[in-house]
Image (cartoon, rainbow over all chains, first blue to last red; front, side, top):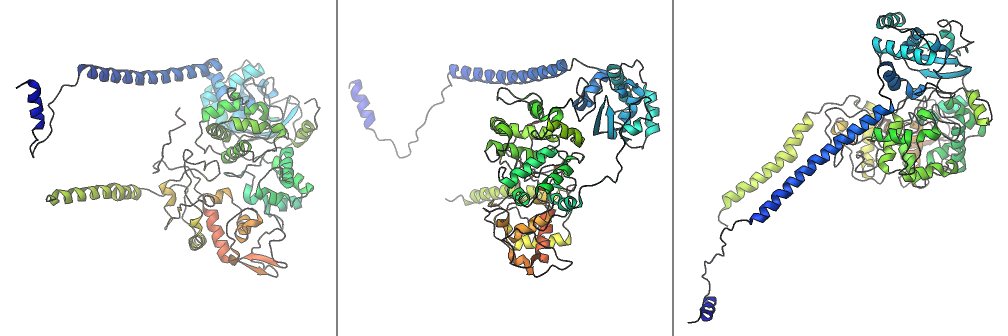
Length: 416
Length: 206
């Protein structure tokens, strides 16, 4: 029998009924094992490399921040952390909103006066370097301990007022005890008793200030026959909530423009159109004046889950890779608002801000001068819109601006 | 098929496991929840309003469960932060809803805090939103020639009210409005809150 015929014969044999196919155990080729091992090592190495680049980036960012602040210590660091948001890093303040520290009469008066102002805060009009400010400075008594107040007061008086004297921790302790529970300074008028030789300070307005016209007041708090009251949605103090905007401290010109746009159908919102079409020009002006003059603490809190660091970056520096300028380049430092075209953003309700950015991006709101906000909003991705809205909500509220000064600015061409 | 005992045992085991994971464990988790700080029980009037809400079938068009930003842009719509289990401790039966023909209402009392707005809107939604598809509820109101001292008059634009006289709210409308205004879950999420974060990654840590 040849070999070929043998094979043919075996192929013809039918397997038995109980036949089970089987395969003997073969070793996995060594090459495959090595490849698998190498892949594993490579993956693990990548994992660690990725982590180290995270920590390197974090380190770089921290180094950047320190470098930007010139590695400050003591009073300088406290100043940057607590004061520079409003008084600006160079101490020049914000025109019409925040008094300057540089060469101010109060900084020149020495660290003791500065410490007393920091411990109590100021409410009411104050005249600094020839300009009147009517804002609110919070008390730092609870936020800083004696040592920090002493360092900060010495730093501010030394850097901006040229004072040589420094203040000790014990002296601050005495001042703190002396001023405990006395509330905020009632404007420059009360501080005049503390600092000799001040220029004439504006008088503190009486508490029973002449309110708005009774007709306006009724409209705000009770509504008219055919419209709801302003306060019923925007809150008694115009603080807003969720998608209802904060009105307190928005400029008069801005509120007037928005109400007229609602009335004319140039800004769409069914509820505000319902109200605005029943309002006369006199009522619009009166309501706007009322809300522009209100000083109310912020009730807004970051709520959209946005990245606050990213929001801060957009607000302060913009993002030129997206073609987005810094919010504050138009809306003023700290988002205080500038004139009638650039409303205050600080302490605005985050859901409202985000919804307006979305409305501009989607073309549902288009009453921005020159279409500025349309383009900016379209360039911001959704996560950035939330980030910036959350950051702005975390800022302190806008100090009210003296109405006359505002009117002069809006009229244009003044030496201010 | 003669080894039915292991089959029954395995089937029973699977059922027992499912019951443990889907019924018993969540039950234990829920039972540990306390009332969140900032949430108060409904007042008597608000509870009556809640019954109105249930009986009018608001739940068929309005949900009461804002989603997290990675699932839907609810926070940007002003509907409030994503809800957690503790937000519903006083809600029996809950009105979570699944349909969103209309907006979510879990925080409507914050977003729209005006009683007179709600009365106008319940009487005739199209008085405010010309495009609204919400039914009107005129039977919660009555027309009077003149409002009494106790009456709450509904603010209506021309063409939506009666030819003469005024529309005043019945107690049912006032109760329902009181309930809607009480819907406020904007207090911060409690530390021990139980919630489904979905695919959310913490953005703040980055």
